[in-house]
Image 1: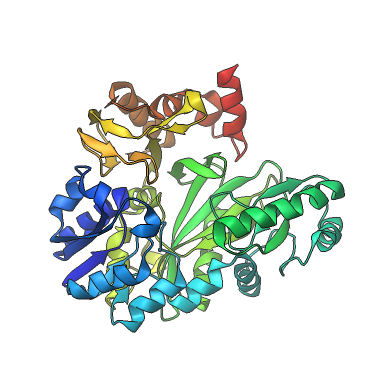
Image 2 (image 1 turned 180 degrees about the vertical axis):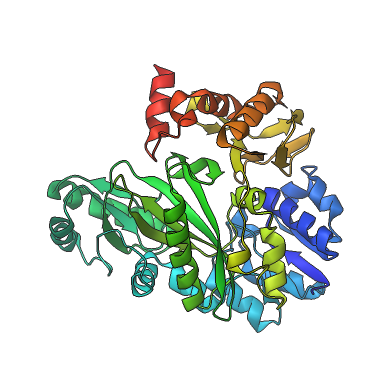
Length: 451
């Protein structure tokens, strides 16, 4: 087992990683920007050591690969955990760690590179037997080729950035004229956001739900799945609420697609935690979308229903200890749900509200709160606006909803505006309580709330 691990991230995920290291008896060394050092985050006080990287801008701190690896080496860390975001899915960063004798807690650079581009990941998934959304398996040369592909698969279609993520570089098109107009704009947006403007095309499936399967692989041809998560409550392709299991999936579907996901990960010699993302069509068919080669923000819902600590499993796998159990020994218990509470104002088009959090408190039984924020902490304008992830675990889905509703009714967030009232409204919605929603549901719900 590792003696020291360098945490190449910040905020809530860094706090989560520090906690996992403490539980395993490992010293955690944290990276931090200067504004984060001044923000009063408890996890920085709990770390064995903190390395200040630079000013607030991520390009001058959390995205500096060479500085990160140098800090890990100089603080005698034998391993590095990238968390999520920033450099977590950068194969060059993983290779740089490898070159300097620092174990990267995640998949190999080759697998990250394979899955990091949407077109190559679609090809790999198709070869592994995963069901694919109809569309192009190669990059599109121009709008005319996109139109020809759209004619084959049928409208509506969606143009997507090969190097995409976070909803950027995406354009839905209902006819050829729209593709002609959207192609250049999507390409330009992708180039600006990711440094690569390559596009591909998929058929747009109306009324779909976002389902993802959590997998763990040992890097030696063995993998298991930890079940699925429902992630359809989204705003502009950003998740706000996740749960496990999905109310839309049957036990047979869970077993079938979970086994397919684990089989593909084993074929790729996948190491560590990863997520297979699917779209559940209205006909009940799941279609592979992409693989995230990192720890997911929403991993705690899976931890609550399986009893497996995914972060500890990542560390143990990287240290050569193998998978935490066999697939046949996996058990799922009850229902878990997670709310992402952000420092944003829903009344002002979700404008971020950085500043001093004067008070924050989430009470209640059966509640888990993952956060780097305490009262008198400061939300920086440089990074994401996540305040806390609030989770409930119950025997049934309704139990989880009830626990979260009670918690939010008594919760206190003072000093900044937050999405807490929006989550209260979602939990009280009849559609949500009945499990009747898709990825477009929240946009319609927000329009109704505003009118």
